Length: 186
Image 1 (cartoon, rainbow, N blue to C red):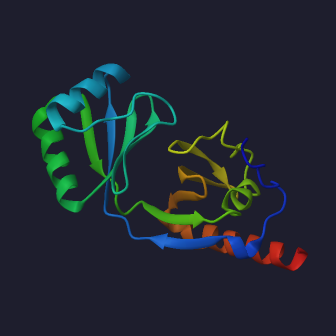
Image 2: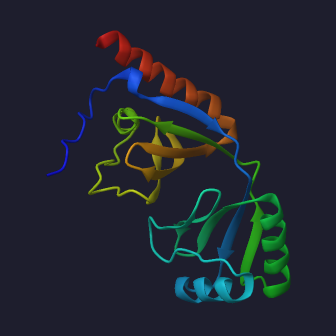
């Protein structure tokens, strides 16, 4: 028998932690090939396992690949791994059928964790965060607090959320304000 899901409209503010993450490098991979062909080509030429379906993540932090669309992926890896992947893409795909672009400076990642993390995030958007709609290990692109984000459910109570670096201060402020409002209303 599983435990009851927390209420989505309330949570214990003391049960949420927010932490800025220092991530390594990011690469954006874009392909003109069909998904299955791109996944196979990248595995064969670059030695990187890409997810083939929406919401999937290959690997685990810090070395992982996120499915963004049928022909694009976000890679999160060490700086040296990113340099090697860029070189492999340039030499392995001279026709640019798969193109890698450095993306490290574009995103800011936050970790939101604790028993109230899912309920806090649910306040900011229309995405179901229940385990049957967003299982552990999956990833989605959505709007939270009216900004586009990438959200990864690392485990039952830990979420990693990436937003554009220029919107990070706003998003963190929204999270902190939502926690403060919840603390006052308890």
